Image 1 (cartoon, rainbow, N blue to C red):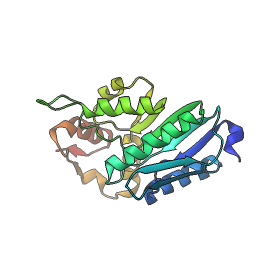
Image 2: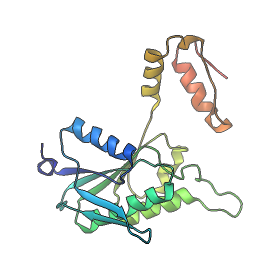
Image 3: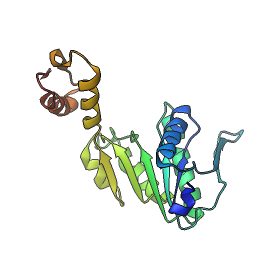
Image 4: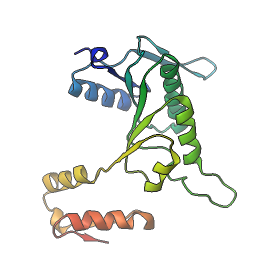
Amino acid sequence: MNSARCGYRVFSANSSAVCMELAKRITERLGVELGKAVLYQETNGETRVEIKESVRGQDIFIIQTIPRDVNTAIMELLIMAYALKTSCAKNIIGVIPYFPYSKQSKMRKRGSIVCKLLASMLSNAGLTHIITMDLHQKEIQGFFSFPVDNLRASPFLLQYIQEEIQDYRNAVIVAKSPDAAKRAQSYAESLPSVHPW
């Protein structure tokens, strides 16, 4: 199906294998083609994006996974969003499974709230909505001037544990840090016979 006729397009914001694979799976599931864009690094290291089709008046979904090079991925997303904005896209929705800098959401000494800065940058670049998963702090949603859908991974993780781990009832769920203790407790309580540690 031609997604241009549906009024929406799906683009991948970087050329990493993980991001391209996720975008490919999403478009296959939706029965649409992946949006045509070229994203590359200039010889001086700058990122360039060229949108290769009309997006005028359409809703655009940008898929962006965050690889190890977080800052490059952010610039790719910002530049692609701005290119789509200047190409007259109606709405630009960022699909960002892991939202970067979400652990920097509180003021510490003479530091800064980098997550709030990133929210402002995404808005200025043209994003009008974000879909993400398991933000480090739910209050982060208040940093944005547009809607944020903070999806929970727990239903899928709990289903996976019950279906794929044979002896899960004898398992112990351990929190990585004190901040994660409530989530670990919630997971343990959702699984029969599993204890938090």
